[in-house]
Length: 298
Image (cartoon, rainbow, N blue to C red; front, top):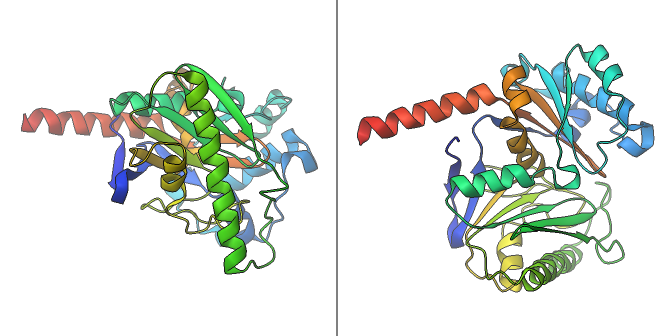
């Protein structure tokens, strides 16, 4: 198991980076290439997946993607609540690589999150905030709390919101997360977690600051998870932040089929599409280097 890299933050907040996992921001890639991005429901899951995969594997020059990240992709790994109904054979033939399915469904990141917590020696909770619901895994149980679109309307990236509007939406989102986690804690009746792995549906910088998403006001809201945990009765709780596709790719990087195949292009298919790379060789090399350094200094 590789060591997970943490960038320390105030008030127990950490940015979590997994060796061998690289997040890819599809909307930005599409925007730079001047390509309209459609969801799976608009053009069909198989067609959407194939289009996204081709763009990621052979990005146009306008995308400014670091080329070596995308070299030697050997397989496609897909999971998520809408990962069913894909014509695997057609996609595999078109891309000349195998198509692998994770088994998590809407809880695609659960396995990776639990692996992170185990490595961190922490008996904790895994939370994955998606576009339409918040998924929680804690004490061997699962919950899915649906987003109330009348209170938290979807933001499509167009239009400008005032500071008061953004502030109001930030408060509603905090209440949604805090009350949901409070419900999970009460129903599990298993005490309090020692920490929380929390995935957001947004690109994060190395300090854990989110960019925009379909949640109005999420951009640059660095205190979102910290405040929501406090509302849930978990003040000053250690928590680790990452992107939702990175969380799913952490599940993929330990998949024996991916280890045998090589670097995987990971897609999470839900209401929206997430994308990341899972490179088991890079994870193994990091683990070997870390083990050598630990042994050398012991």
